[in-house]
Image (cartoon, rainbow, N blue to C red; front, side):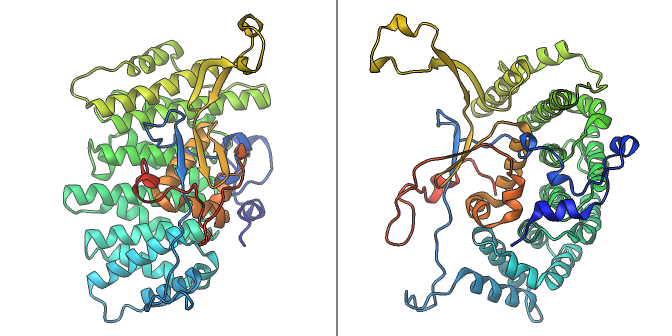
Length: 461
């Protein structure tokens, strides 16, 4: 079993630039340097039809059977993964399609059946092979699957030396890929996401995290031009999401706060709804970080911005009515920016509802007048539910982390949360609630589990 938090504090790599000037304390990877209230990820992709905005993920329950289908001769997921890795590393006579098929099978197997033990046993062969596939650039699709496999490997292993091995290759790919526009867009966006996983889960130091945020800021400020993806919405969105994810692991964002806030505010005028939402979420994360810092230390950040002007711009996006935006995108825009505005006005996290309800049930007795002042706000409505565990999404940092994990793991998020200490650590510190244990069928599956397309609704792979 990995103990990521223990590994992080024992690594003692570097501290933030401001912290270096005022105290000698050691600090490791950014993933756990924030306090519990900031431990997690981007605003969850909720089912729009759900009144409670809750995301339900069922644990992958498939069992790998032997070829003859005999249930008495089952192959365990760990054994299947071991065999898959051995096959993946043997590419002597493989065609490009063979390699792509093997990478796909490996990625999907690890997505639903994570096993750090099996991956770590072959990590010194897996990482060079995956990096070779990325550098080789024999086909755009092959590069994409190699990047996905690399992310899944780092997210499951959590090896503290991985970032030094993979980051240079990923950055070079992000800066220099030269495929057709659509392929170039996807490769650059995926490489940015992989770099963020490398920093947060591969042993990246705080100094490395700060340098990565600077690189992302260049992409955001230039609208992607600095990496040859000018005015490319998906690439800028990837940079914004990666910024929020990595920033969620840093104690002190004051040094870059003014520049970052200006860049995010400019992106509110983007014609791409996803860019606007990602920028707004990062604004909320920054101001949340400033608020928490002041509450903890009694000191305020030296962050210069027009508070009233910013709130007016954010409020305008809650009512955006441009006909050039689809109805679905307008609903998404309004919902997200209503959440952001409420958060800033009330000092709350994402998805907070100020609507009132009876704190007690008037139907159990008494007159209506007895309950005149007995109201309470609904509060946080966004939750991640895994089996009988309900995680309350009550901070923008938690929302940023959860959003990144969902974008990579999709339907495998529940399995990783239950079986992968790296993922569990990224979501540590969050408020959890427990319901009665779901009953199970004869195969050990929860009766309340959601399967198929419904379980994946709102999740991007």
